[in-house]
Length: 390
Ligand code: NIG
Ligand code: FE
Image 1 (cartoon, rainbow, N blue to C red):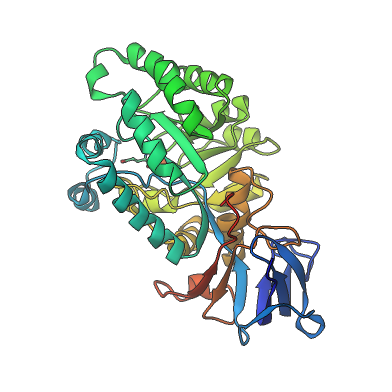
Image 2: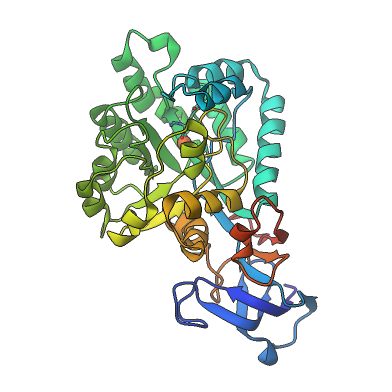
């Protein structure tokens, strides 16, 4: 293993409260860090930096953990910019366009899907994402969903089976038959290819009772659970996620005080997706309300062709600050350690000793520039650990 010293760090954000200023962000000024190809080996004052095989002098730049994007739908074909334009002119979002992407995705070759998905993953990485979750959900057939999961697995180990995105068009008059398929033969084919199962539990998609059946079957098949909940209305997805001990309930655009009480102290993270409120012209949920209630939050992109074609985590953070009432540090924490919690990954989202060596060097003296310099490419170097668990 080659060791590498990153020295002359002006501001190091570790997200480890035992380091530095004692806050959750674990900040250290004039710091240094030693890593090998996979892990953080040492963190401390620049003056006390040990020797290493290689040296990277960052000349006063800020360093942060890599972003953890815990919610994407990268594997799709086609585009729906016409829907976006209609929404900007006032047409509401109801998830109805999903079937258009299903048609385009079914018609695409595996090579086309792979190339397009990898290009979007590369854009996320350029923005500083070092771990991303990727879902299926745009074929809605047994072999099609399996194909999307295989493409997703060529990008990440955080692969999610979303056969229950909407009812497949072939089952428009037999939704019970589709729920049976998703919780039966499709799950059996897809479970070995995924780590997570997800359901779009909302108006126009799946009910709480349907989602419960699908998720319980998925758990029996060995998958861990996450849920799309309460994007379009307060329809019970949050309570279901808490009831089932899901790792995360995502969107939470509409939540009640009871939802927040159930989430606080539960094993479930609330993942906020401000790109979706932006691109569907929906009201943003107040992130402050979640934090004040004691709920753990994550910030993610939800990158997809319909409700949020967002491939920048700094922009997701900026929207969370400006529109959801978070501080810059809360947004940074949500985009790093929050995302890690939403994926139940204690090894990422922080830079304590033993963490994966996933970090960002910024073209800036402070991490706040990620949000302050809106639209600028503030991340100048993305380091990802090379062990296979990425
Ligand atoms: O997370 N809400 C459901 N799924 C996606 C949108 C999918 C689409 O519109 O294509 C989301 O917003
Ligand atoms: Fe989504």
